[in-house]
Picture 1 (cartoon, helix red, strand yellow):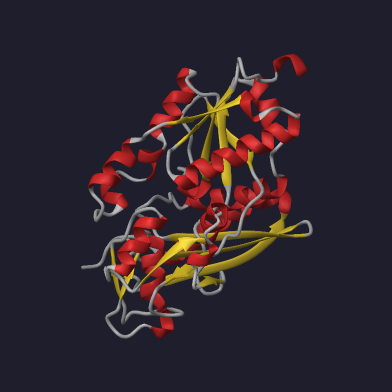
Picture 2 (cartoon, one colour):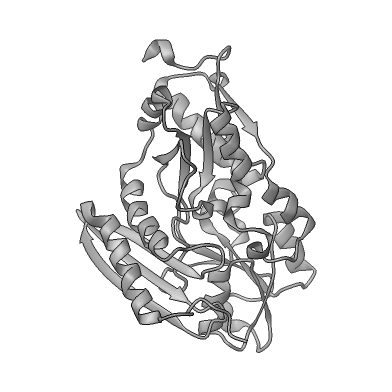
Length: 319
């Protein structure tokens, strides 16, 4: 496909949000494509697209994400640019992606997965166990909120959003005693020094697809599909097939506290999943394995078992 490769005069346009982490992910995508096809980085153009979610989150810094409109707020304009031909591919953090894509778009390319763990970040404590009764834990994630309250009901959870720098400033100002960030993001930003410790999945099961970068394209763009196939990580795709099928069957959104992690052991996928009441009063867990080719079925079956155990109204807030 030499004649179809991008050039500085006709670059491949990579769409992304403008946060430091989003830009780091876009640059990683560019660098992997350049290496795969022996291209100069100038053959790619990184296009920053501001989303409705970015604007609303900037104004309403203390408003929960679910009240701003959910995950789709951070992808809508990027996907519109992709559909209109303004960009050729879009780079996303997979844990932030809805399970369904708009008609005409495909999300089937994943880069090698980073560290899946959550990072505990605090200027005053080495872990949640060291915090006194009533201490404030800052997070905008319903999953993390519920997980904290299930294990540490004596703590208080407060809304806490922003980039790494904003959250560190809030910690210094005493808005909360601690917060959580994804280790994957800290690794990509070169800020592992921020983490007091990384939390093992046994202590805090991560969000579905945490640590994975996904690349979205137009379904009818065969040139881009061929290029992306060269950088797709098969193992990450196999793991996410199980996790995202689990999430889709649960109808997961920013309003449902859900955690899930698939790990590949030889030809077998092990999937751990949990659902939590938003107020942290209950957590249901499951753990199962299946051949890697049955990963999606594994995710769907686990979700159905958990839904059967949960019963109606499990994800409703209790007064």
